[in-house]
Each structure stands twice: as structure tokens, then as C-alpha cells.
Length: 134
Image (cartoon, rainbow, N blue to C red; front, side):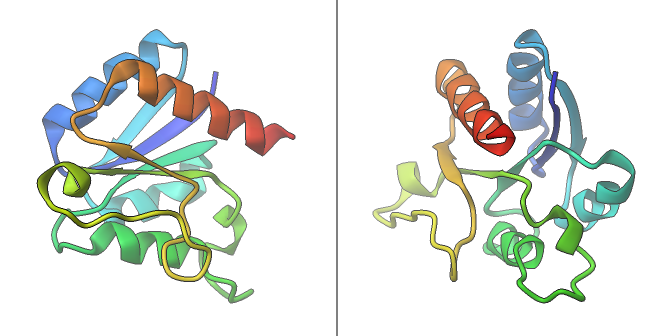
């Protein structure tokens, strides 16, 4: 059982992901904003973070990923730098824009498109969790 933190401001998406992940045996926590999610890290120490792209701002998720993966040894999030990040987005289905993980500009481990396909979500989560333990 992994502890998974979902940071997303859409309660319907959070519920759908929660039901899927809990049915696969994971413990799910959620936050409706990056500030709330980042504030939960010390207490929760999650095994995986699922992060939405657009919340209060259109780039909030990108900015949060950059904070979490900051190479600054004095970063308040340095202890969480190695937690896998799965980014959720509807951008791919609503625009021609395409994003991919990039160590410098978009430091996430994988993407998943909204609406969420439960089988794809479980597969990506299990792959990321497995990579963390190796």
C-alpha cells in the first residue's frame, strides 16, 4: 500500500482517481491547491504525488513541480525531491499543445490525460512506485 497525494482543484477528478487508487489498495490523500498539498508533505511523506497542471493559475502544477524538484539544497522541499510526480492534464485533449517530462523545465516523471482511464492510471502509478523502490 502506497501513500498517494493528489493535488487537484477538481473534486470530481479527485474522487474518480481516489476510487480507482483505493480499489487498488493505496491510501489516498488530497489537496485542492498546491499550497495545501505542499503544506501536507512533512506530515504525510507520500510515496507518489499526482499533480494537476491548471488550478488557481494555468501553470500552477508546473510551478509546483519545479519547487519540488529544485536542486537547491536549502529548498524547503529538498527531502521530497525524489518522490515520483505523475502530472494530470486535460491540455492534451483540449489543445494542440504537447508536454513531456523535462528535467530542467518540466521535472515530472509521467503524464496522464484527463479524463482518467482507470487502467492507465493504475498502470502508471504502479510503474512509478516500482521505479522508486529500485
